[in-house]
Image (cartoon, rainbow, N blue to C red; front, side, top):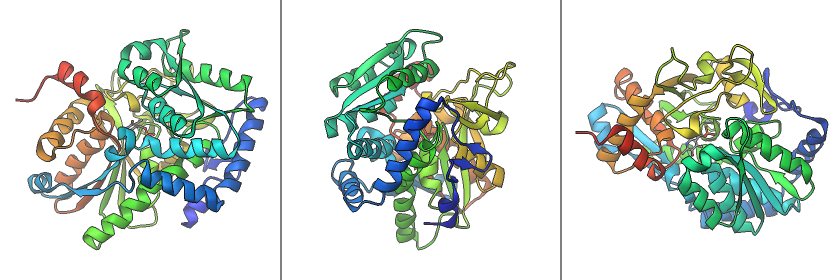
Length: 398
Ligand SMILES: *Cc1c(COP(=O)(O)O)cnc(C)c1O
């Protein structure tokens, strides 16, 4: 493991000035137990072997790295995709959900609890719970329940209990509050499973470590295919878990790295979620990060065409990597993202998730700026969940 990964986060969960833990004392005691258990269990051969076996036989890993032949010819650069869309359940999220659930099993927990926005994290966690025979409780705002019907049905089919949250704006933020309240009622038999590299320590570290498999595989596969390292590595950033997964393997290499945030409809109207570009240090959900804030310092309402990216905060490690200048944080707007969604579908036969299409859109731009270079994109998920929305909202291209 690189020196960087060993040194970050610090023992108290800091990534430079970011991260840490800002939560009530009763919750802190539980987080400390999870941290201790993780440090012990992640060195256990049984744990490592079981996780390896799950990744191979249940998730279908390693996922391939794919060379986009037709697009590369059209772009004048070499475009490669790490195919996390081919991971079981169609996105990278299962990488950390299976590992979090395995950790729960080793800690003797009986129940998994989490919030979900669009339902992607809820479905991945419900899948992990079914695999291990654990109970699963997913908190979801009533607005999101109405909007994301197929994922609600998926969770129920998988045996999870979906708890509707009916206060406030009835979306993700209230769902987090509700899930934490329920967790505090029974922290002994339950474990809280966060959906990205966010939240109080140890979650940003834990989720990054469980997602590292993406980068480790991709680096090896890319070297084997091309006998060199990629010139550029690109991933979309919501909370930032798929990005940390792939970036973590290339931090010590001479590669340019790009994290792509959603520029949404416009910078001016606030209809975006460019946290790294416009956020100021603040605290959300128990950790410190760059945060899009309103006049009162509360998390601002944010927007993206991809519901997996509209979060006003961002993982603390991204804040550190941005401050160090190691990763470039850039963005792609809705229009370019939808164009990329269709272009990848029609040129390569791969329908990307709208989240992932942000990374693809930026890669297209990069190809024009850096002709003949190689670009490795983490294709974090498949787009089946988005097809009706895209066609109804934007129509089919001519
Ligand atoms: C949830 C999701 C994301 C955003 O989450 P990160 O933690 O930023 O990776 C990206 N892509 C897909 C397909 C998702 O489901």
